[in-house]
Image 1 (spheres, rainbow, N blue to C red):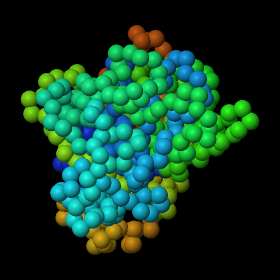
Image 2: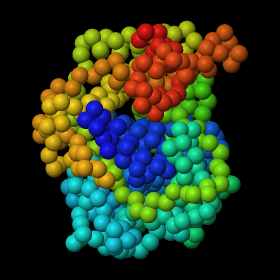
Image 3: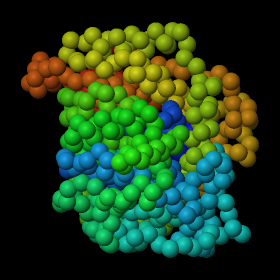
Image 4: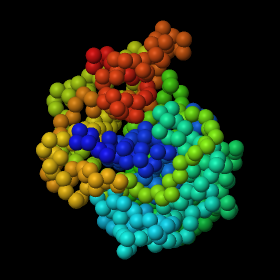
Length: 482
């Protein structure tokens, strides 16, 4: 149960720990931060062998916790741009995963367990205290992009996925995706490999079908792997989609355009290189505003696996829109803090050991958006704010409400702590270390990750959730803050 001193993120993480302990809070927090900041894409870096598992985890978080229709695609080295663009599209589900723009209805495998209210809004439609039973998901355990009902996870005495923070302990969905290849004949983007079993079959390439037969819907989110190793033509195609916020398909004399949802999000999961930026051209990399590094532990047997019998959106779209509205209207950066941010960017841009050519206007704008988002997610819910609570905001499994928009303070001041929480996530993938691995600063760079001095820059409870990356950025941040 949340206390008066905790913020939005603290409260959501407590709910996550109670209801979905299998989910990595770092991944959840990063996705939430991107959504609240507003239409920002996420880059997730991990060990190469763990890319499939982390991609599946990101898909699960977006689809089951945020209620977003999500498509997961693996790109091959020889992918064709037209095929890729077609695979971004999906047939609209019979029942939307979340409201567009106002109604929200989800169904459950079980018709006996009522669904509790979610934070910030009662966005779920009840039918006499129960929910209509519908057809189950495919047998491999990952929600299909063409289905709208939540996932029913079956008990399984299989492997367990553990993360360093020991909060992500076991995910039946990931176990099923890992051990049971998708049934049926739905094809998958990319080459067949030993990693194929990790990827749910969430799309169907068109194999020459006409535009008239193509689906007319764009998913709310796309999780990509292999983007860093595919062709330049694919890089151009992805950058054009993100730049114009639309998908344009040409077929002989016929052209068709699909607009991306206003809250569309793309997540790219790639392999980690701590001294280099991701292998994406700058014209594409600039569209990924935030970056997080996740290193999962090896799979180990699970004697007592966790089973989430029902999956539903902890934070539906209406809540995200509410938090984003607060971030854009009530959060303010003082002139002093603005100068402070500019000095930080200047220090990194001119650091002799860093390549900071991508730290331009786009980077500055992204940093500002995420500082605003941080100020809202970490705002202290105390004193008068605790009195400004109404029924708009309710929390599952808790009688402690959160503040509504009715009487929230008209002015939330951003602080240096907000900058510290998101600084590395904004800059880490935009810079590269210009020095050999055995250079004079190598030991300092690798040893600065857990520097005690940095602990004071962040709330102790959240240190490591959003800032466990980019040690070289932390050195520059430390130099300016201490």
